[in-house]
Image (cartoon, rainbow, N blue to C red):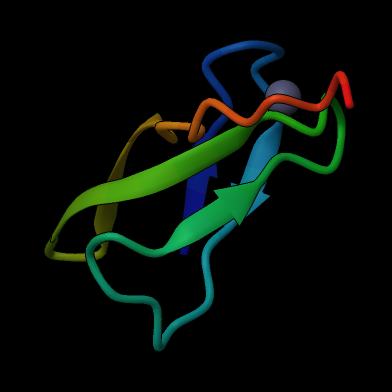
Length: 57
Ligand SMILES: [Zn+2]
């Protein structure tokens, strides 16, 4: 299955055994997306919610 990256419009390959909630990454811009729904082979992505980590220390 193929989905489009919202950021750069690249194709993102979704594994056939992907499940809703799975995190996929765009290989072009490294954007992370969560599989929001799958209907009839059409995949909808939403931006992955990145946990706020404090990388400063
Ligand atoms: Zn992208």
